[in-house]
Image 1: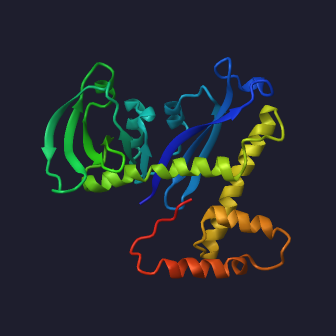
Image 2: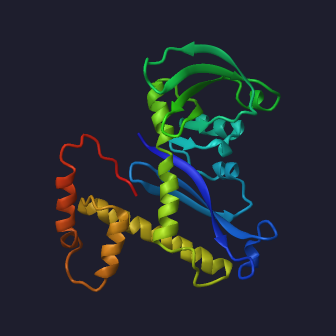
Length: 268
């Protein structure tokens, strides 16, 4: 099933060099919005906006794929916009917001010994939330022992297990890794131009490069991580060797070192 992690990040700029990106009066930035397809992970939909553009407004521009999941943080809670996803046949998993009032309708059993602590059907309260979402929502709470914190999510999906709903939200961290990788590896902290168009061209070039690298690695069936992949290619930019031969030795070594592992996740 398609699962998209939806998030945004700020790209800091110099206010003196880029006054057109003035955000707070003392800082300048643009905002990069991404729907990351976790099957890749690859950016499926990307938009650049002013830094002041609210995250939740981006849901109006996001193409909706029926049957897919959209995993989001609490900054995207707007029940009118979430209802648009629901009416289009898509599912959302969004972290809860403490200022939204609700009442519990019923509780569902949870597997003993798991990190999931509750699985509930809830009904929203209040003059703003209730009219925009008059039906029931599913509320799943879990305890994250690694970071010693509680996580509560809301979803319109009723058939998957609570543990799988929690796992879908946990996978959202891949979009944060994507932002970190793009900023650090593709060196977009230094810009070659200071105009609006120059900054956007460089950012779009960085996204295109990421896609080219990720697709090439996937097509060749290489397990080398993307950072090493970029480093090796940069050292052999003028080499006539086929790309897969550049990684033959290191890729075999990685496969041998992973013998016995039952589950491998592709990390950026």
